[in-house]
View 1 (cartoon, rainbow, N blue to C red):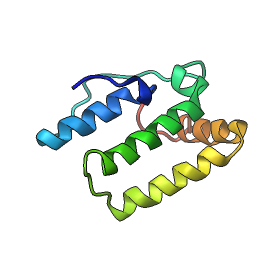
View 2: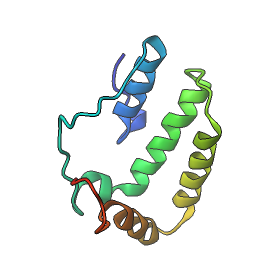
View 3: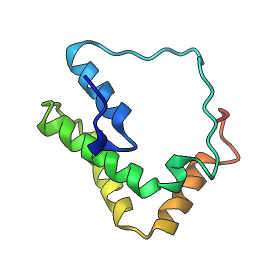
Amino acid sequence: FCYMERYRYAEDYFLWLQLGKIGHLQTIDDVVLKYRLNKSAIHVRHLKGVLWSTLKVKISGVFTLGMRPSAYDVVRFISECILLLMPSFLVLWIFMRMMFRKDMKTQL
């Protein structure tokens, strides 16, 4: 397995999908890393590029890796496609509202 440039901003996501095809992946409840996200982070500055790359990875997951999406996955995919069609400033506003809510229980 290797990182693929065509999935720029989402290479790790495709790698996780590939690993998931050969073994069982699990999550743990313990916090082992705190990830700080601010308004100048690459995921924020290139939000539409990240979104587009993520959609490409999801398409490859289905058609290249043979994964079967759930109904939730399909609804989320459609929602992300709609976001991609929106003006960048509106997508950024929605993202910031979701990521930096005052009532968030975990710290980013």
